[in-house]
Each structure stands twice: as structure tokens, then as C-alpha cells.
Amino acid sequence: MRRKIALLLSAVSVAGMVAVVQGVAKADNPIVQTIYTADPAPLVHNGRVYLYTGHDEDGSTYFTMRDWRVYSSADMVNWTDHGSPMSLATFSWASSDAWAGHVAYRNGKFYWYVPVNNRATGRKAIGVAVSTSPTGPFTDALGRPLLENGEIDPNVLIDDDGQAYLYWGNPNLWYVRLNADMISYSGGLTQIPLTTAGFGTRTGNTSRPTLYEEGPWVYKRNGLYYNVFAAECCSEFIGYSTAPGPTGPWTYRGTVMPRQGSSFTNHAGVIDFNGGSYFFYHNGALPGGGGFTRSVAVEKFTYNSNGTIPTINMTTTGAPQIGTLNPYVRQEAETIAWSVGVETEPSSEGGMNVGYIANGDYIKVKGVNFGSGATYFNARVASAASGGRIELRLDSTSGTVVGTCTVPGTGGWQTWTNAGCSVSGATGTHDLYLRFTGGSGNLFNLNYWQFTPLASASVLTNGDMESGTTGWGVFGAGTLASDTSVVRGGSRSLAITGRTASWNGPSQNVTSKLTNGKSYLTNVWVRAQSGTPSAKATLALTANGTTSYVSLTPATAVNSSGWTLLTGTATVSWTGTLSSATFYVETASGTDSLYLDDASLQ
Ligand code: FUB
Image (cartoon, rainbow, N blue to C red; front, side):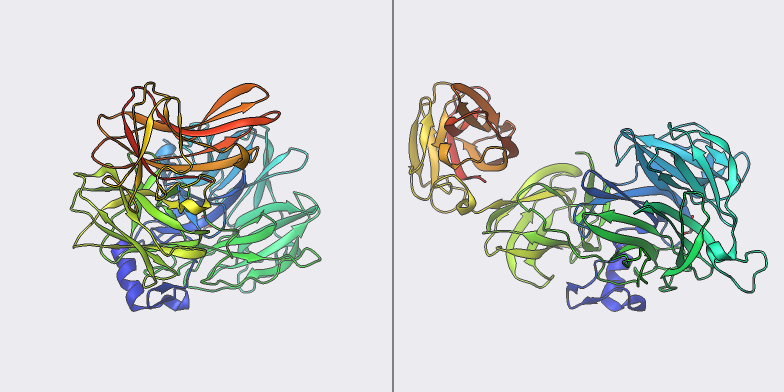
């Protein structure tokens, strides 16, 4: 998939859906560029949108689908790839066809309903898998189908009274009342009458007199029940009906999304998130895309004042970004607004990493808020080859270079190390392009990255150590010196010798600078003068006569041959009157002498 996309993107604009001009990716739709995805099922949970999809295999000439995928986003444009937590293998009784599913959340568990072929009967059946996490792993809840009548595309509505309904069907439309355990049901499978009043009129097909085709997406909004469905294959458009109750009677309301693009199916998912309404669908807009190589996309829309849905068209721009992305906390490499050439894969360090990176490939991360500026970029990388470079560019693949990092060979594609580089000129909000360069073949893998902010945004004084020892004291015993021979950035670092206890270290009084209840990001670079101690940053807080210690960063091994970034995020809070707050760097044990540079607390 990857080479094909990279090559085709440089040569063509496919059906007008993908527009890449002179290194500037205009498109943020489709959402996923690393594989073909289909049948979107979005779920809002804890301030994020989890997007469950099917997966069309490359080069398919049928709905060849073997696993399902999960992505998530808090801003609707940068989507994190969580890989494949469920596949045909999850259901020992399933033989093929990992088709359109839906995830429902209830009582701390996520239930994923999917249609698959039952090996024993050769018919389509509905299975249900369960997980305590939205990103899985999911396990078969029953070890057998939940129900089977040869039809597909399950969808669940949990009504306000707690009654859950499972809808599905092609060519018919069915529902069943799920029990509160979500993995059994009461009563029989009930057919919803497909009347022309309820689902529109299809002409020229006596066996299917209404527009309803498949893929029901049933939800309740402002007391009205909506059924948004794929209509009148082929090609399908998206239509919808409404009803006063979960079982009808349904009234056909018209078109949501007209027939567009090169996929002859479409499939809807509708959510409200963060005050906006979003319509997910699929098309064939990626290079090589079509009816069996589809891609999920999203549009933002506004309901009409009477609750009807406006006509929504496919775009390459997609939904607007909600807020900005913070580059000063760890960001997964697989958090992507747009990419060309790369793939994702499970990482030995957990989650996913970006892999199969070749010369000229890139990742766009949209709306990155550098604030008053960044000074350093750190990347978690691995390479069984000889590595390459990461160019950090603003706003396009040919935009301003604010840093270039060299990635070394590490001896393995999952042998991870940190690679970093100085950054200058990154202020304000920009689209960040990670552009990869190097020799031929696969260069390296990327697991995560993080920028270090300029010390000027910090509550620490003289965090870059360029003003000697100004602002710094010692927590306990030790002697400070400004060092010019071992520096990480600029021309000076801070050296401490003569520590007599592990908790001794360079410190600053930040009593008047802290906000109660605020989450603070700490970054400080540390190097041992000898030995390999574990170093950490700590905050000693004294309020109402009681002292507590906040771990600002985890203890991290440092050495004398290079600089190590201690980084962490911690919420700082106290009860009563704060009389003293001291930021300091200590070691987990021992009294090794240290160098510090580029410290920030913000
Ligand atoms: O992805 C396979 C099938 O195509 C789905 O189950 C249908 O909804 C259609 O999108």
C-alpha cells in the first residue's frame, strides 16, 4: 500500500478527492492513509472520538476483510492509530468477512458487534466481542454467534430508559431487544416493515421496493430517533428516516450524502462531539481506491433548526480542528493528520510505531501550538539499517526547516533509542511536517516524539543556565558552578559537586510562581560527571506546616557520555497556605556529581 500511495500521489489526483500540490497536502480526508479502511463506527468516550473501522486488504476485488481497526482523536484532524484489536481470529467460529460493525459502551465495558461468516452454516451471523478498554484487546463474549439470520451490519442504540436495541439487516431491516448484559437478548428477532413511507421509494426493483439497502445507524437526538442508512445500491447514497420511538413508525426524510466518489458502497456513522455534529462515511479517494479499497472520511455539519439533516458532500478538507496539538508532551508518531509513504505496526514498546519509512516520506501533524517557542526535538527511533534524518518543517514539506535530526542505526527495527536535535524558529501554531530523508530502502522506525519548550515559558529562572548560577541554589549539601566545557545548548551548563545525600541537588524557590491544581510539564537535561545514577526532578511543597513531595519526572538513568532528558507531567496541588515550594533535581540513590541544562517547569 505504502509505495503505491507515495508514487501515485506525486503523479495524479484521484477523482479530484486527493489534492497534493507542490509538497503541500491540502487533504485531511480520508482520515487514514496508511491502509484502506471502511465502514466507520465512531464512539465518543471520555473526551475522545474512537473510530472503529473495517479494513479492506490491498488490491481487493471483493470485500476481502480480515480484521477491524481503531483510531482516536481529540481534535478531529490528528488521528492516533491503535492498530487492530480484533480480527476474524477473535471469533473461533468465523470463517471470513470482517464486515461493518458497531461499538457500544455500557457499565465500563465496550461491546463490539460485527457481522462475519459462520463457518458451520456458511451464513452471515452477528458476533459480539468485549473489552474494558476502547482500544481493546477485544475477546469473543460468547464463543458463538449472538444471533444469525444471514444478514449484516449491526448497530446498537441504548435508549434513555436503559433498553438497548440491536438493529441490522440487508436486504431486510431487523431489531432485537438486548438484555442489560449486552450479550443476550429477549424476545424474537423483529422485522421493521420496509414501507415506502418509512424508507422511500425505489423504482425498477420489485424485490426491494424501498431505498433501504444496509448499514443502519440508529441514534436518538433531542427526543427524535434517526436511522441513517446506505440507500439503493449501486452506487449507494446515504438516506435517513426518523421516528418518534426506537421501533418506529419510521418516516423517510431524504438524502444525507448523495452518490459521490468511486466506491459503490457508502456507510454512515453520526456523532455529536464537543458541541459539533460529525458525519463519517467512506469513499474510494485514496490512490488505488475504489469499491473494494475504500477509505473512511469525516465532515462536520449542523442540523437544521427543525432537526432535519442537511445535504452533506464529500470533501478533501474534512472537519476543522478542535483546538491545537501540544508538542511539549509525548506525541505518538502514529498520531497523523496526513501521511505519505509510511505504514504503522505494533511496537515492542507498546502501542504502535510508524515504520517502513523511506526517503521522501512524510507525516503531517496539524495545528501544532509551539507557543513562545521550542528549543529541542526528541524522537524515539529504531533502525536495522543505517538510519537517516528527520526534517522538521513548518506548514508544508518544503516549508521552513526548524530542525534536522540525525537518526542512527540501532541494530534492529525494534531496538529503540532517543535521537534529538536543536530547534529554532518554531513559534505559534503551524502544521508540522516530519519529512524523512536518507538513502534507499527502509530507513528507520519512529515510535514517539516530543519538543522541549524554550526556557522563557518556564517558571524557572535561568533554566538555560546561560546566566551562570543565577536563580539556582542547592537542596541540602553541594556546590554549584557554571560550566562551559560540558554543555547541551548555548555555552553554559550548571554543575553540582559535593552532594552528600541522594536528595541533594540544584534547586529553585518557586513558591510564588505555582498555581494550585495546575498540571506542570517538567523538562530538564541531566548528565552525570561519572557513574550511572537515576536522576529525577522533584517538588517539595510545604503548606500548613506539612511538607509533601511531588515527583515531577520518573527516575531515569543518566550517564557521563551524553545528555538525558528527564520529562514528566504532574499536577501540583496543596491544601491551605503554601509557605514553600522548591524545585530540585536529585538521584534515586548515591551522590554522583551532575550537570544540568535547559530546565523548564511550565
Ligand atoms: O464492508 C463490507 C460491507 O460493505 C458492509 O458490511 C456494508 O455496509 C458495505 O459497506
